[in-house]
Length: 360
Image 1 (cartoon, rainbow, N blue to C red):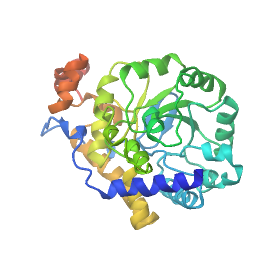
Image 2 (spheres, rainbow, N blue to C red):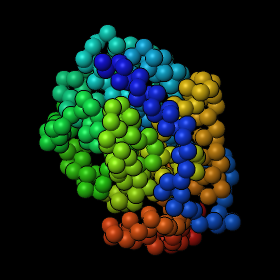
Image 3 (spheres, helix red, strand yellow):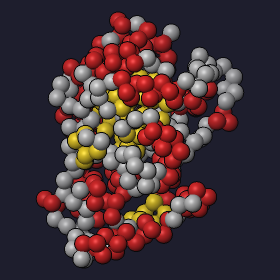
Image 4 (cartoon, helix red, strand yellow):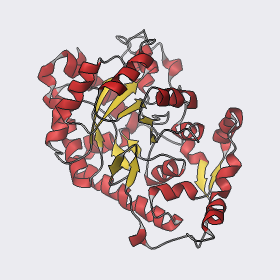
């Protein structure tokens, strides 16, 4: 039953968050400290624009859930937190709604509790254009996410095993809806080649959705009697690797997957993300401590991100792409294998000063 599956996903995702998350490849990205680079806090704006969209902040609550009574309550609380902090929010997959319209309220509550916020609907890559439009209409959505998840489907006991139609169907949806389409991975990453394909399909934004956060191979394997796909746990590209791989591609990217704190947000923005999303860490706070604690967490992240930008001399999120970075460890090895020059990131502020005559 799909509602039970949705509840299982929440339970297993929270269990993962209670485990030791530890290091990920964001830890191999560090800012070069320039002691006199700081600016005044009033100069800092968190607003970000991309693909014709304007967000007041570069942080968003990424797709989680919906489709059952419990997940409807979760979506209500997430929407309240989004409304109170101004962060955009994405629905979980709306496949359950297409199978049973009686669960519509578990998704539409995102708009009802957040009438003026930025809300994204979410469908899979096999959805018809008609279903995609229904999803957008139900949420009065500002944009549409299409999630891609071949690894999750492979491990899921009842998952899809036919993927060849995904590419043409994504193109049909992108052409057939009246809102911008964002294609997101669910935690295994989008390679440069994939992002280039999405651009050709008319997709407006790619959400890289890399490894490092909730592992849906592990979640689906936990739903299998024999746990026989454990060797796929940890599959994929990290979000930091995806951001480096996508350098120079003429398509805006969002970063999600393995974002643990405001420094990871700043790192992702410095690597070129236009916005940064998280799911698991916000879900854990909501489930363990309640909606007011989530509001505090989101507000704290935004305040600390602004503080980090002040320290780094970045008046806008886009300015972080001109701050110097060091790429180290296994991430540097990934870049070497993929032909990415990491030295360029360590000298970006000097290049920016050359272009501006030395002014900040």
